[in-house]
Length: 392
Image (cartoon, rainbow, N blue to C red):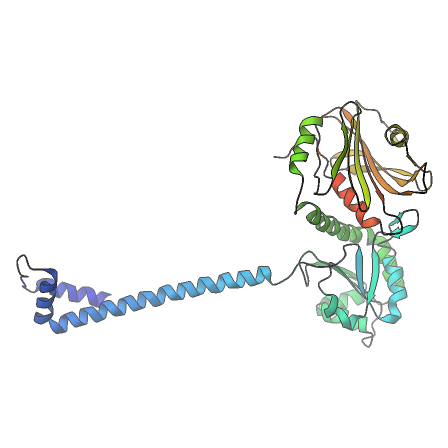
């Protein structure tokens, strides 16, 4: 560029008079005739400069595209984990499955009575050598209960963990390691590694609740995404809030069974299988302790659902934090007074000072002969979206 500027400076010093009133092409022809070598050099410099600028621009474009591609591949390289959210894939040696169940029983012990017992999470054993087949499942658990490197579970754990972490796990320093999104997005992986089953069972008893909460939070996040990120009945949600002063997220497929300000009842349901969510309220504070909560809860079926009642078997009322409210969680079984029907329910009752009301929110399912936990938890997740003030 500097050479080009020098040539132009020399050109200014040359006494050259273009033809008066001459056309542009005449001037250029005269210029080329008078200074052919000089003009050629100027044009070559211009051409070289343009090529240099183009190369520089192309280099920048290639760099930007490379970075963008890298970011795209980084963001899209992992697929979202696929599989049942209430299923645990357990990779352990065949001979260690009994030990694995003893350890996991201290962590995943919750059971839904329907009335037949149904575990919240179901363990499915897979041989460690088959990890590639199930690596994209949302819940992975890898277990090693000894130091034997001929054991396929131990070999897999040693392969997964960094050397120092593996050594620490076998020295009882860090036996339970949780990682997120190892092979897929929205995935939780638990590595359990120790020198004996006994020490791992003892440690699981100690920290099991913290581990369970991480898996359960992922369950809630993934199920919420399934329920609410597709289609919601937002017009119905708005109508409920304007009519009753409270709201909740309603997925597509639910219909209004009954809404009555006089009865202080809002009821939505869905079929195949049959399930419902009911919100009832009373003005003022009508529950002050657990005894009041149980009494208030037991009255609901008699007042609004003449054909069902709660049974005493497995009926439970426990303190809970429901969203921002302190209240009681009521669980148990319902049965029909007319037919041989029944199933599980989950309900919450609490007092809200903003609306000066006592609320009772009930979820219920009827799915005879089939699993009920997943569907009931989905109803519970919907109930947990209850609000009396809008965030926006």
